[in-house]
Image 1 (cartoon, rainbow, N blue to C red):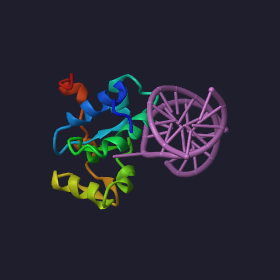
Image 2: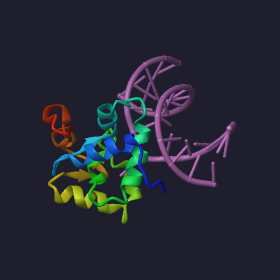
Image 3: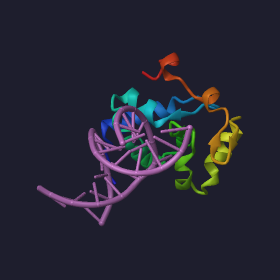
Length: 113
DNA sequence: GGGATGACCGGCT
DNA sequence: GAGCCGGCCATCC
C-alpha cells in the first residue's frame, strides 16, 4: 500500500464524496471529470482502494449501464444494494430501475471543485 | 523492469 | 439489436 495516493486517485475520491445521498454516478462521468475519460478502468481500480475509506460512498458508483458490477467487492456483496435502497434508490436484480432519475449530474452542480 | 490484470467504455461486425 | 474486440491508465506479481 502506498502511503501517498496518486493525484488521479485524489480527484476520484473527491468527486465520489461529492455525490449527494439518493444519487448515483458512473465510472465514465467520474473519469471524464478528472480528464481521463479514456481510462474508466483506473476509476474502478481507485474505487477498489477507496473501498477501505468509509468516507467514500463507493456504493453510489455504478457502470454506465446502471448495473452494480462492483457489488461483489462489498462485504457482504448485497451491502451495496442495501445502502442504495436505504437512500431511496430502487434496485431490481442488481440493476437500478430509476437509473436516469437517480443519476447525479456533476455538470449541473459543478460544485465538486 | 516487463507482463498481466482490472468495480470500464466505445466502436465495429 | 446483440455480441466481440481493442484501448486507455494504474497497480500487482
